[in-house]
Image (cartoon, rainbow, N blue to C red; front, top):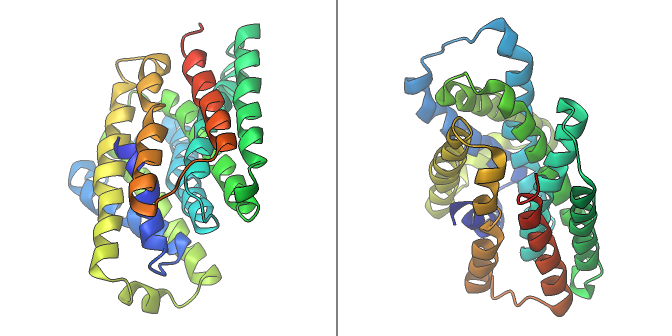
Length: 272
């Protein structure tokens, strides 16, 4: 439910003229500040450095910046939410390439089915001006999939350490990128009103430190296949909230494509 709420709440902040890359940076900055007392600037063993850096960049930088850019360039939110489900087939493909895991014929069929569902959504006439947003949503899904693969190599590390590094990389890199691309950084920060600050804080505290942290904590005890079926339900909550907040009414093409994507993703986790 919390993961689903992230999308419409982010869109509310963007509608309040907060630059997308700066918003992602501030979110990661709040995460970093809150985790410092638990992290205490501990440095992990050198053998974890490559995976930790890769995880921090893919999760802390790429996931959040592509998410905000996808919503920034979209007038319709629901397809972005469903598009994020591509993280699961992307994750299976990444596991096969990077970890040598086998993909059965049934999984290949369901992966193809998930991408076919997204293609059906692409043909929705209402999305003519949202293709760039859907492209960024696909990059967000790919980045999240890579983060899941890298996280498997960090199971021995304390969860506060990995998330603190994620916040550190995300805040610094995105802040610098925002400074050079979006400009007027100080003016933009001082122009953010209280309601937007509260929503950004919600993203950092409830979504990043609540939902994400707990999900990665569960990876220490359960397999991805046991956790993701529940996680993959977040589009239902997200689409419900977009209907309540933005009055978005799903079209027939969106419903057909969305059902195919979500069903394919759920079935992927029932196949070993």
